Length: 429
Image 1: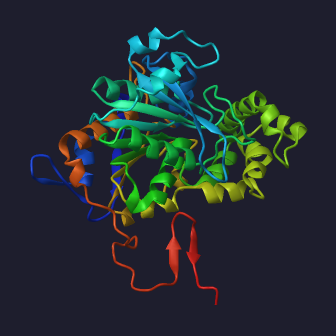
Image 2 (image 1 turned 45 degrees about the vertical axis):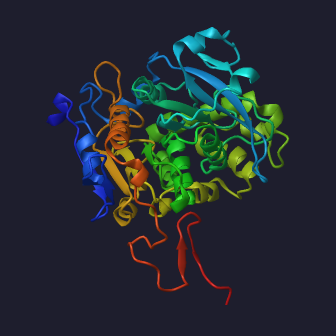
């Protein structure tokens, strides 16, 4: 009956001996303990008493906190995936209003002028947060701004990597984003390191952006320059999440239909460019209704996958958890109707001392609505990031090491499990 008072249950899954973090005061603390202390009690709106109501409430209009952005267009340096992507940098209200608003950009967003951009770099030591939005979203999303607004108000800097084609951005190659598109994030982080050499960098991902962020952090492994990362409502195993979506009427006829419809709108906006790709059939695409149908008709062929399920298996981030070598917090709701509980890699979190999974039994997908419209997960994520930065000696964080998931140094060459490619690597003979 605790739900009558809005009390959700919170549980944690982690390694038996999580990494030890050095504090600024000279003491040490367990990574898991720091998260448990930082995480506020989960108190939600009891009128939204299950994951479906919580998730559907996101459709209710909410202006959210105002955040102003300056947009920078990047040209990709990737040899296989050229083209452009956009990054929106948070600026003050005064800076945002100083430029004439552009009707072709999201609200409160303007382009950097060439002159303004040349002066962006800084030697300051402000912490900076890199954000990755969810499926077909962008820097304008309310769930994202509910994290960005309070953390920038406390003195942090922030920016948002927009998926290609999202947030009213243009594409110059016949591809949108995908669930494993880590290359744009990688290029941005490398550039931020050049622009702001003294800033500690952190990252947060939401839903599909959480999947991308998890894959990125895992691919970087012990060389990752981020100080910590947070994944919110990650779908983890995309194949399992896809099956779970199609299992129920609500999953297929509501959630999958809405997400598929949002992707079709992106396709219609970029139709001319996308149809330059081989294997796309405009008539079939326009008949797509569900998310998996769009992925079958558009995402699979444009990225070189034979089927949408092959795409899901390759892009999923569940296995990648064991390759993470920086402090990493994941937040999921067990009643999430989109990022299914079945897809959460509980055992992988138990294998990696750098990771902690925080689950609530109630909250929905990127929801966790409290009275007044604020979202608990945003409070939890910001509380963790600020506590880690304020209290931990981040320059002395333990460096990741090339070890097996169980913490032991490998003693044999084969077989070797590659968590970022989900295969055992064997010799040719």
